[in-house]
Structures are given as structure tokens and as C-alpha cells.
Length: 134
Image 1 (spheres, rainbow, N blue to C red):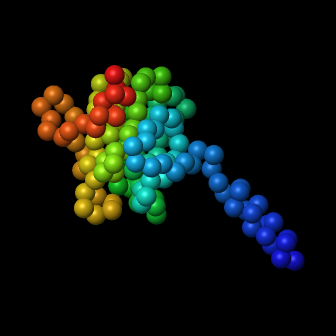
Image 2: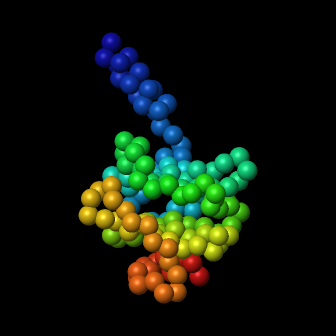
């Protein structure tokens, strides 16, 4: 009976796992759609039927922390990347929108501040992210 319960438990757990779910660490890049778990947040990169993409950040209870505007979606055919630096800041770049931005980690676990990166910006861009953009 114990073996049967163990087999059922393993089967149920394996069925619940989504192939698009990944666990990521600091200093990692995201460049394809899916669900990414990092410490206390989930980063979702959603691809729609027309090939457009958006991303959002939620806590582990799926409460939205940040969501990219749907009318500013980017294309999976363009060059895009998300990057999590050593301070848990989330960097984003897309070539088709010519946009580079950062979600700066606040003091609370669910606090992020959105900043658009431009030539006058005072937020230092991590070297790893700069190299990826070249």
C-alpha cells in the first residue's frame, strides 16, 4: 500500500510540473518565453499567438508586482533579453522597441521601481548586461 501511495504521489507531482518553469540565479539571462522562479518572485515571459511577447513580475502567490504594458509588446523575432544582476535588479532590453529599462529592487521583497535607461541615466548598467547588448 505504501508503494502505491508513493507511486501516485510521484505521478501527481510530475504531472503538475510545467516544462516552461525554470529556476534561475543571479547573473543569469532570460531569452525565451516561460516561467522563471528567482528567490521570492516569478518572472513570466508570455508569447501570444501572433508572436508578440510581454513580461511581468509576480510574487510566489501570483500577486502582480510589475507588468509590461500590453500595447508595448515586443517581438520574438527581434533581439531581446532579461537579466537579473547580483542585487536582484531585473534589466530588460529589446531592439524592436529600442528600449532598455530596469526594475530596481527595493527594500521590501515585493518592491521594484521601474526606470527607463537613456543617455542621461545615473543608474550604472552591469558589465555583463552591457556585453550581452553588444
